[in-house]
Image (cartoon, rainbow over all chains, first blue to last red; front, side, top):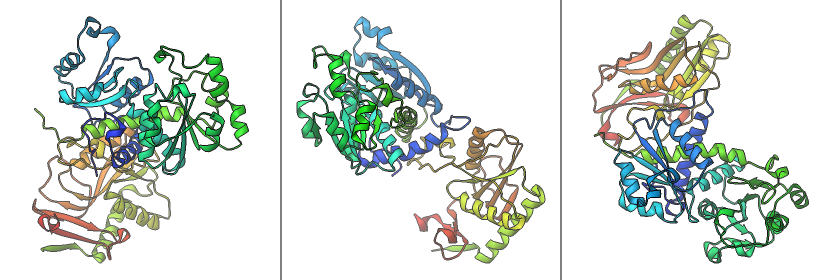
Length: 311
Length: 183
């Protein structure tokens, strides 16, 4: 197989294990490229990509933009805070206006779950979901699994605990799909108020005690407490969360076995993760960031590769 | 099935030896020369050239593998995309003499892509091209090899197939076959 089974990357749920493996294999080659003296290939030179961000982002947006530029694509950036969305323009109108300027691919982040799925039914460009509300964040899940594959050789058979705010996390949902498709065992861990009721139906184990979760897992993917999505209080205070769910060196020492620490960023230092863990050798957080560029190059390249006549 | 033997394993070996002698004439001790095999099929020839040269010269010779998939000019034009291969270039090419190595030269488009791909590793002093089989009168671009194993007249409907012993074939052989017989 040399091409993906889909025309858009909307979520991990929609793609197959073969798709994920093809993305990983292609990312291996791009990782070599981004470590060269000249980190650029001309593959996407006749392609224009719009990064459309209706929600804030630092690393995802930078990572996509860098991936696009490394592939020689033309890039335009759009953020809703400085656009006509503020004047009441609909999503479809906004995107159609961007497409009228001859854009081939759309990378979109939106606060509404399903926004990219809606778009994919109405427009004729490849869409990559860069996060839709609390639903999916497929490229993050791909780079997380890829980082595990890089460190351990394979994802199959590994035990991964996703710890923290599962309720508001698109990273958690996409990670669960990706890891399960690749044959890993997944556990979620967090306070009851931050675990969605349906989570067990995804076939994951649920654990409330972070120490037990750490004893069980090979890899802990620690999620950020998303303060911006919490209109109501889900726990009494950040200090209390940190006492019960924060991961620090003393806790890891107590476990007495190596646990690899991942975090999709940005870290709330001293809340879900202490600096003595985040900056230690156990953490592969910066590898995740580096791999993010290679994974996004791979996804963009593969989605763009279907036959398209010049006109 | 029409299948014509272009080089049997004896001639194959003689040809490799001759190509290596020609390389030594031009590059003497290979101190400032590197070999680059093109993925996916040029690397077997490059490996053989390297080991033959090393046996002749008694010295290590630098060899890299270059994948050109991301530099091709037919991206988004093919019915099926091509699968990429690994690039391994453990040296930079700045001011080096480079011998590009591929098994068959046909349209020349792969070589154009390779010249483009190489530039990511520095500006070489000189680039030469070595091929085992040159298909005559089929070039789409002004590209000619410096070292040729054998030049052959072929038709568009034909394909040159290089069989390598190390890849599981019984002998090293080169065949000219009709495409319809293989597809």
